[in-house]
Length: 295
Length: 314
Image 1 (cartoon, rainbow over the protein chains, first blue to last red):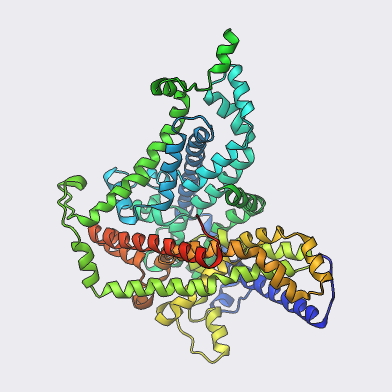
Image 2: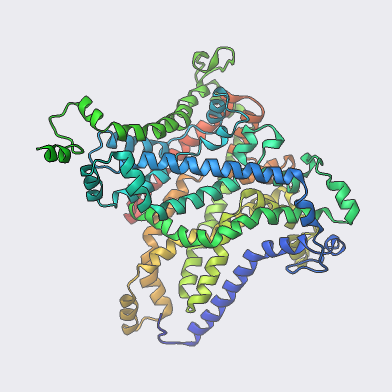
């Protein structure tokens, strides 16, 4: 933007604004930096509360512990299973459902659109959901975690809007060549929707990565728990943490502070998000725009 | 002739009977079927399941055959001392979140818009968007560390002469912590929608304002601000509609019996008595009340906004 009529007030406002933004960035980053610093710092200094935003007196044993604790590796694996199955199911069901909705002469188009919108306005709430899973005998299965969130009205509407923008001549000419709707969807629509699918795969993956409440109420067995629930037991509900991975022995052997390991476990849970963040950032603004312009 | 038939194939003719249309579009119907069923089972069955709030649930009779008992669970709720506490807590938490959490991203977007260095602006955005993607467990994990006796929040408060305390066991500290955490996590991400509205402002409008002698404040007031009013009112309506729904997952992670006084909200109560305590009917009744009130709140907010600003959801 061009600079017009620079006055004293205008300049002091700029200085104030820049300082404020820097302060905000520090507040946003501090928890992450501090957590990382504590995870690799000297346990004695950690115990004295001397670590702020940079590491002091390196000690990497906490990560050695993380990568040998079978519990943590198992929780990682559980999360990955939820993530892969959950996200694929979400994409598959949403794509299949949104395609007919995007076709203007589909006979059930209007009723199905209403059917979807209703789920946006009304919901059963926690207790009926809980009883439903129980009555379906889905407790302690992956389906309790993955199926209830497989279809969201918001995603369906965005997919449909996207499909509607694909010229319908493509579909009609494919008909002439003898393709049926499955062929058209998988050979024409899906290849054309790769950016959309990539965006929602990412968002789905982050959602499943961060999920903890549903697994907590539907999965009773600690061995089935995803990483977030294990993290909860390690950092928040520390009374419920049962030391089966030999944590205490490890702490004694290397004179570690429990805080070292707590912070290291937070870091390994954040890292995957950090890795996909540049991709996410590239997509989320456009994703929000698709929704708001035509939703 | 054959060719013409092929062209006709995907297009429905008016005179086709309903069944014939279905047959022609059998693949489309087949595609919609799995999604239809998933929505039916996981969204619509629970809606019907709400009727449990008016029943006396008997596991041996099953869900459908349990006897109806009317509004007993609702009466029980209003008679219990809990009803006032959890409603008050939900409302206050929502009120403070709205009061401080709603303007924050708007102001942040306006300030970002005034930054002149593209690179600096992008960096600030990248940093402030990130917390949005962290899970509730991680964010509350941070809170746990920073509010402990030797945590940084106590240190900062110490500069102002406060005694160090484990803040998560102090009931007066819960609301500020919850609201602050919400702002920390959503400040940047919440600003995206306003920034998008701001990019729609035609630079010519700014130039015209300058020629007319407008200073920077006047341009903010009369050019920039009007551009984000529609987005702001729509977001405000949405917020008011969900005012009673707390981010209960975070509250569940943060609270403990010592601070139920301020931290126990409607959803956490439903979770405790319903899921943990097994009083399903009662929990469902409380949950239903929450959705009914929310529904009327959003109707009211929309009506109000239409009256005063001609911006509305529908």
